[in-house]
Image (cartoon, rainbow, N blue to C red; front, side, top):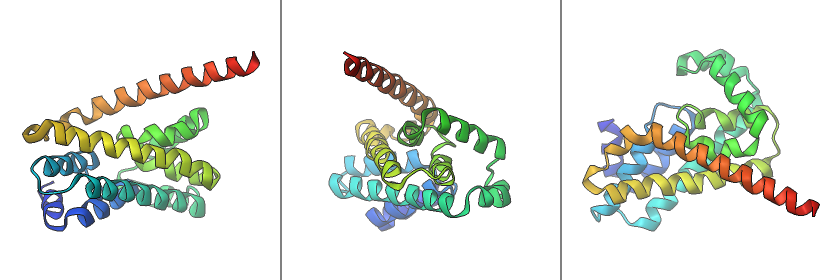
Length: 196
């Protein structure tokens, strides 16, 4: 953990970008904590808000695109062969796959908020041969929201930014659940309105 914080302190925007690419692909990087620390550095005046957000956004987008491409090219082969080394169980992959089939692209958008899911949703989307434009719409929208959420939390919590790692699991699940309910209601109202 301290190594990651030191990396960001040293390399700034490039550090945020590179660590998020690796974290989203599936390496053990505490993504929410990283983003909250970036928000804290904005609070302290050590980083600027716009470049920090852009570095986080681009890192998230690149990471999730790499995962999608790997899924598209290799299917489930890499997860079956190397998943255990990355502590990824095939039961979890199957759960994400089932979730993806039920709610599709929305799982890409809000999967960022669910620990252990954001690393797999893009891979599953690629293996399921989801079209690239549809993938980009949902996945990149999620990157916009997720990056903004945790950078903002780090900024507004200030010196208490470390609390984000304790709250990340609970907050993430609440945000993802609320967002799915809201989007479901919007979709229902839109369909009803189209019928009339």
